[in-house]
Image (cartoon, rainbow, N blue to C red; front, side, top):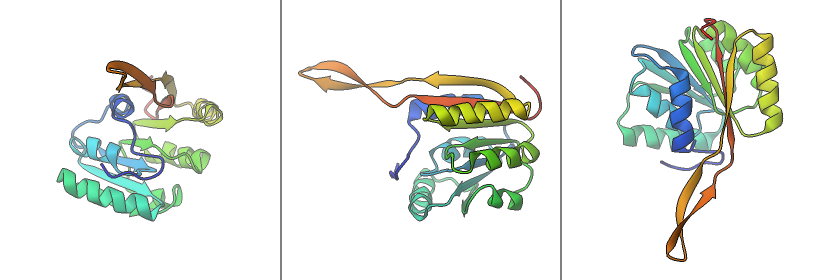
Length: 178
């Protein structure tokens, strides 16, 4: 997986976000702030169609390589800024937000565009608070999980653990299935 700043989402975190999305066969999905397309690639194995959106050239370039290496052909990469780009997409069954720029307007747009789960990963507590408050105001909030993962490494011939940054995984549901 090619690296870009801010990504890729760590596999352990991606697995939990993927579970929260509750992707079904035939779903139409978008990954906002898709970065290296790690989440997009995971969901493309089940979803009918994936729209991976990122505004950064380096992210789109890395995503193209990663998608090609994964031999996936149902991901459409879109270089653009959300929420404006969302108007061009069809109705969606679920959405993942990995980048939090314009988070409030992105969420407000997605509420009318998604018929299902919206999952947001954030690392800053202030942003987590903003997302939770907004999801509550929009009456879509389901839950928030703070995930702290540590990975093993060798230290003086033994195994130690080094933590990665904690991540808030915040879930909303536009269907009201809470």
